Image 1 (tube, rainbow, N blue to C red):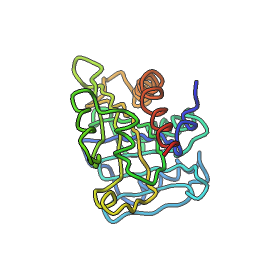
Image 2 (tube, rainbow, N blue to C red; image 1 turned 135 degrees about the horizontal axis):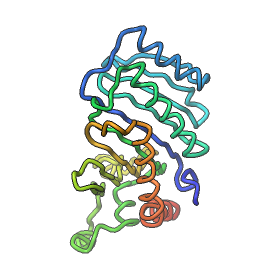
Image 3 (tube, rainbow, N blue to C red; image 1 turned 180 degrees about the vertical axis):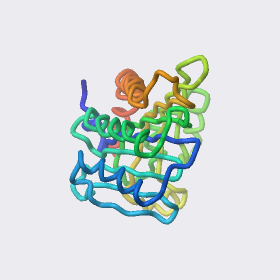
Image 4 (cartoon, rainbow, N blue to C red; image 1 turned 60 degrees about the vertical axis):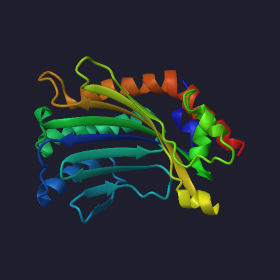
Length: 247
């Protein structure tokens, strides 16, 4: 299997657990939760809070690869940027999900959605939208728009979401996010930004009584792997990398 990190400039695996009810935000609970995370990952020693009530624990970012975890009013999030393997990221996410019911009073009944996101970033100085259009095409129904004399693509972020069960509770989304503005295209002054490809598997709603968060995470991981290996590498990531390399 192709290492995902070799397909782009930056690769990351994020987990988000959104809850129906607000999470506890008192000092003792938050610190105790993060201390337990830090026990497994001692280099996660940067702790701070944001104005909107989020609490963050993370590693130093200057090494290029780093872990992070947040508690928000109605979300618990975990991420690993540029992991040596996907398994290391999933191990971290499982720890967070295993601790949340006992330390943050999160119930499987309280689950609004559980997301697992695989992100692929390409660093490129130029018109991201034009690159995406050239690499992936825009479909026969709209291809002729690219033939308009003098036309420049200034917004093209293809995405598709598919349901994988009859109730539409399990979904997978493939999306491309560009970061080029019309102002940059007009002036020709482009910054070196990230063009991102996201593969997200999501479980909506409360989990079945016999299903844990960790078991659900494993299912979402299988969905992401199948999507990336069978559809995204050859059709999305490799064409983008080739097009960027010749620009």
